[in-house]
Length: 140
Image (cartoon, rainbow, N blue to C red; front, top):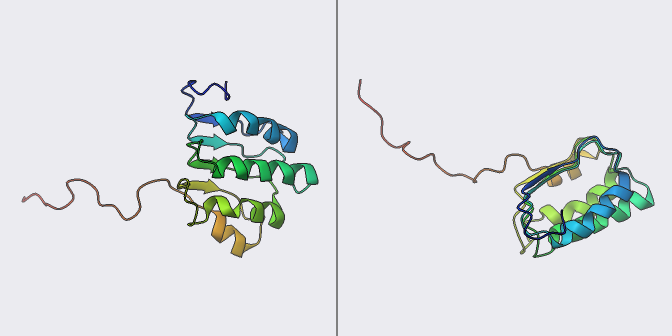
């Protein structure tokens, strides 16, 4: 389904499935060619700091940085990616990423606070925008 570019799948939620590095690595093949997915939720999947898990996070970062995917939201909450995993994923949310803007990137505070502050992006709305019609007040 993921490898089918015309699937129309916009959000994939696989949270709580114990994917680990093996599962995340397997997902990357399909994610790499998918052009419709916008949100990937892989929270609470036993993604840790083993070599296998870190290799999978490296593959995931590569997929998120390529110009093919349209993923703008990633949920990695409740995984213990640690400092190593956080550093692997940091280029994904770096402002210098020319391929796309990741508007939501969720990690939990099991990583050092300085790294958490660089990685964590909540929301997904427009930055600094005004609501329509907000300029006029009605008279009572």
